[in-house]
Amino acid sequence: MSQNKSDPRDKLRGRSNVKDSPELIEFYEKLESKSATAFWRRANDIEPWEPITRYNPTLWRYQDLRDLVLRSAELVKPEEAGRRVIVLMNDSDAGREHTACVGWLFSGLQVMKPGEITPAHKHTASAQRFIMEGGGAYTVVDGHQVTLNKNDYVLTPNGCWHDHGVFEDGDISIWQDGLDIPLMNSLETNFYSVYPEVAQVPKYNIDDSPMTYGAPGLIPADREPWDKPYSPLLVYRWKDTKEALYNLSKAGSGSPFDGYILRYSNPVTGGWAMKTMGAHMQMLKPGQHTKAHRHTGNVMYNCAGGVGYSIIGGREFHWQEHDIFCVPSWVWHEHVNTSGSDEAFLYSFNDFPVMESLSLYQEESMSENKGHQKLAG
Image 1: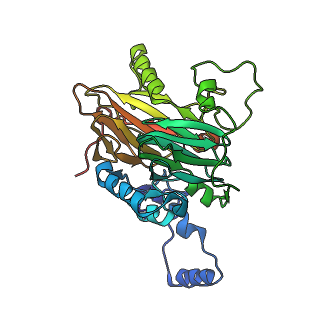
Image 2: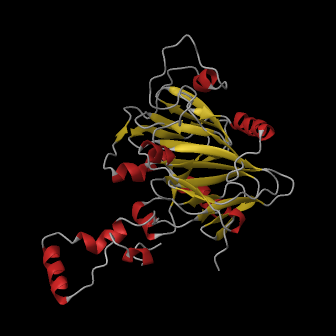
Image 3: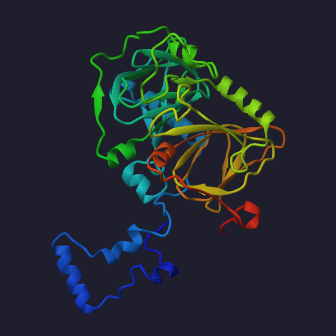
């Protein structure tokens, strides 16, 4: 979406409405020669009436990418690549320029074969994983080893040493990575370090994190208070999440915009699991069609099960299991479960914690057309 599109409101007092003249053009050229410009020439672009995204709603079909992801496992070794990831890029100039999916969010599909490891490292960027296929995979985060299974949500907080692997008797595994790399690069704060050894030696019992902090509403009473800026629960099990969604659906009608939706939260604070990125899992009942809303902040979705479509900016994007799509900031969107008998599940991650910490989060529901968008074209 262009930021140069004229708006009739720009003629109002307080907005730039200066007409060019030969003298002004000469003046502007002199400013440019001094690495300067006149604010009023760009004011309406850099201070728009409302957010204007540079990114397009984009759908990545898993059936189109899966064979290519598996092919990468034959062509490149993880120790050679550092991380064997097929990067998803937004269908826009901004997406290609910044290697971003949408806004401050980077994402890609990582694949590992049984017996492989990804060399240990750390970086300023925070990361999260959503396991799409396989069993017998694991990650080690600052000495805590946790096992990974399909539809688990996994944390790799910023600044933590981490490596990944698949046990010899495991299955080939594919997961979606989500990182805030575009944000870190925009702030010019991104650091990357390599661990002294190829992989960490776990310091704790395997799965100590979910066994200690995975019980809903219960935390250890005999330990020092958790004071790190991220959740001590490093993996959120799908079976627990799915059960919680079913229980939630028995307790009320859910959100008119998202169906039944749960936040992956820090069990100690109740807040977001990490400081710069959040995540949700939501369930749409058979045949459910949510109402449209929009908000500041960008969202990446992954269909964890079921079939349906989302209307984003007036366009339909049909999805099935493990298709991935994005909703840019301040773009209208609504979701539809097209099955008449089965629930649909959507995992998503976002940059809402950044929006909220800077007091920038805003949300708006659609009032016209009974709360639904009109399809473009």
